[in-house]
Image: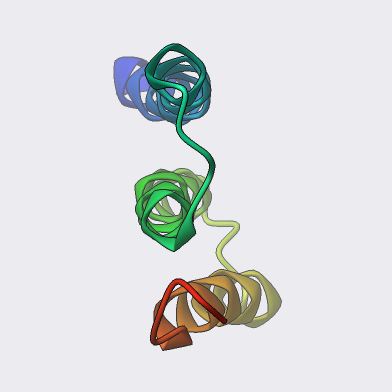
Length: 79
């Protein structure tokens, strides 16, 4: 069961580093699509890690849901 924690933790790191390297080499800015992808790709493993450790409290779940709600509430690139 310990390998699950390692995989989830490394997936968070891979998303952050991979995303920033991709944006650097493609010479594109960080737009809302990039932010939306990162929020969902980082939020779910964090929630999984907290749940597996019996540490997913109401406060943590509210913060994760709030971040996802904020990222997906944006309607366009111009806002």
